[in-house]
Structure formats: C-alpha cells, structure tokens
Length: 206
Image (cartoon, rainbow, N blue to C red; front, side, top):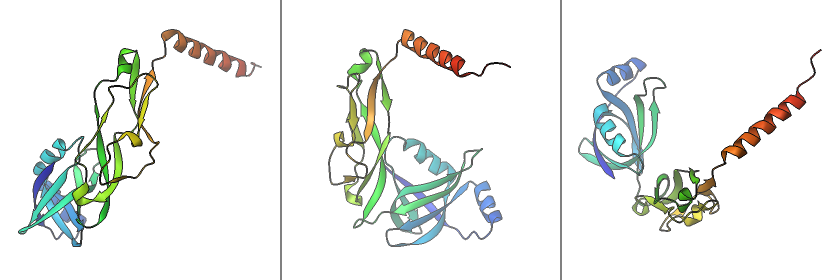
C-alpha cells in the first residue's frame, strides 16, 4: 500500500520550537537514507494518522512530496507520547533500489484451523517476520494458510512463501501452533497439586 504525504521543511532549534510545531497540528519528522542527505521536515498530523490507521496488518510505503521532489520511503521509527499517545516524531527511510534493506513484514493468517473444531486453540507466536531484499523485491504481504492445522500442528519460517527475498530468522522458527485445551478436570488437578506442594513446603508455626 502506498500513501502520499506532503512535507514542509522545518528549522526547529529549541524544544519550544517543537512544542509550537506540534500545537499547530504538525509532526516533526526526518527523511534520510537512500543517498539522500538527512532532512528535517514536518508532516500534517491529521493526514499522517489517516494513512497510519489504514496501514495496520500490511507493509506501507510513504511517498513524500517535499518542495517538488518525491521520495519513496518507509516509516522506520516513530516516537509516541507515553500518556497521550500522540506522535512526537517520525523517521522516514528513503528506499535505494540498488541496496539490500531489512524490513519487517506483517503476516496474514488465512483460514480456520481444523484443530479448532477438535477443541484446540490457535496460538500465534509471531505476527511479522524480518526479510532482507532490494526495494523492488519487497513482498507486499505474506500469507500463511492455517486451514489444515490439527491439534499439535505448527507452521514455521520454512512454510512461508519464497521469493526474491531472504528471511532473517532460521527456517525452524515457529510462527503459529495449535494447542489442545486443558479439560476442567486437568486444570483442577494441577491447581490441587499446587496447593498440596505449597502446604508441604510451608514452615511449621512456632
């Protein structure tokens, strides 16, 4: 998914300048990488949030327009206020078509596992994976079909689609597994055993 954002150059020197910029509805940001000199810019807060909300669960590219120039970027980092949760700063990395880059790609789990009908539950271990490739070879999304998974089955990095990219993690890294639900009787037995052990270990009252 590609979003277009308009950026304005900024010349903030002090913390108060940044505060005033944010109060005016702008987010301080920087554009760097891809042979481009690091450039301070500001992005309209409302425009960015519209794009950001649409980018969940898939990789998003941001085409930034700055003074007549266009930069194809990805959001490399962001700073968020710990309480108000508003964006404080954004880092946009310019993609160089000739260089290998590392990206985190969201995973899309497709289908309903057979194991759910058997009384199990699906445990998603990783919702994204890191890949290394050139900008032109970036996968738009990675799907993993979980329909055939039974209780006890799992899928790993090796089960992901292959292409002109390399997965950073090892092939045996687990992504999703179907567990069996413990019965009520088993849960009560475990709880009872824990109480007995605690009683045996407790020191005698003096």
